[in-house]
Picture 1 (tube, one colour):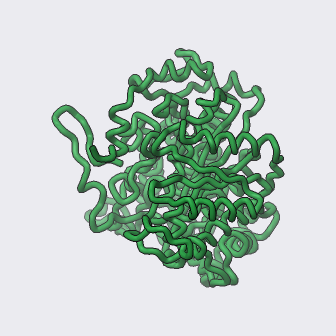
Picture 2 (cartoon, rainbow, N blue to C red):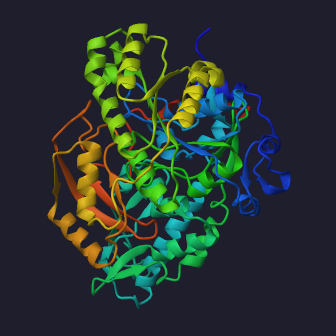
Picture 3 (tube, rainbow, N blue to C red):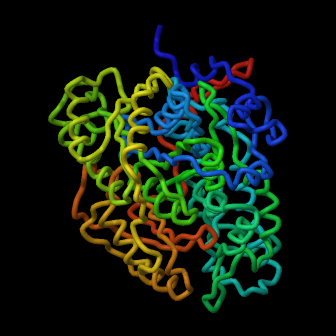
Length: 558
């Protein structure tokens, strides 16, 4: 019999009713808003009642740079949560929601893998509870009100050449990146260039994730800059009288979602991706709730630590005043050998020389995480082809750098395969104190913040700012946005802004091509290299392999 696919494992699972899962952490049925048997939103009233409880320990799971060989960050997060449960500890997982575009593109879903998954897997990877649809609708309502204002006389004197608000769609669709709207008759609107981003790159997504409550959400929505007028002054969503209607669309989406792992560990899944073009972490509301619900909150940040963890620390923790207690850094021997120049089809062969060449990627991520003053545990997501010599080499390498080390076999064994890692994390929490600090102060000029992240986290030797980007940075400081953190947008596949540069590139020149402010989210977005905010589909997208039978059973979703 062949190895079962993730979706087959998920479909064979016997889920508990979500009411029973909630009861394990003291949530009564009346505090749940049910979406069928296995999904629920947690009420505002419950979160208000627990807000004064002491916080549990905050554990962040991150990873080396993604490779085609796979790393298993979400799999490890889920498996670690299950392992805590097996050891008798009260733990809640806090994860990001998947985006539809990658599910049908190349990434697949975001439920974990093997016997370390959150379920119901198909629901999560498709429409789930409709949060992303609500974000899409709110985003596009604002776009509609903007174009309607221009059509109806343009009392705010919006310069149609300086409209910065983009429409969005939660699908990889490259032809929508650059479009023209308003063609046709006079009544069909004013003709102008327009653009689409994928929903998860919308500022609305970041606002949902960073808002602390409805009042904060509305204030952030009001600060969104949609365009500039003929005097170069910002025009906001508040100016367009859009805030109330947008908030109404987002009312339910603001509440965190509760589901379960294959071993019935509670999991809050709310908001999130992408770390290369947006904020990249699950919501502050979900993380704070998990910290109050349990003794341990295990969360994750998107892509590699250079993107997801940096944003988690420098944006999310800064805004929410969170202080992580430990970081788990996920790697695989396969991915390290890939970084060492081994082709994908040869990764199952022992190759200590390639491992030594490629482990520099892990080394840089360790160094980066240590800059934030948080204890680091490195874990290898184990594969059957890994050899004892390869594992021993990585273990020694990590321990030499002051990191705890553990193997994780959670894909194959679920929580049982994560016990070694869980014990190492618990030992680290007991023996090593976190002295968390952000990388830079608010008062540092925007340009210097960009340079600091690029040089200290990525390893760049120099940062080149395109003339337009440099001018925009200066303009944003003049407008009063100089104290905001920077949200660096770059490729996830390399520490540099060039996806082809694997391992640990050093002293390269990083190119900043565009800068804009997400005033509602509370950060300045810095676009580097060729990163795009609306991905495209590959030559053979995952959608080709997805189907549903007459009984409603989905296949091919992974």
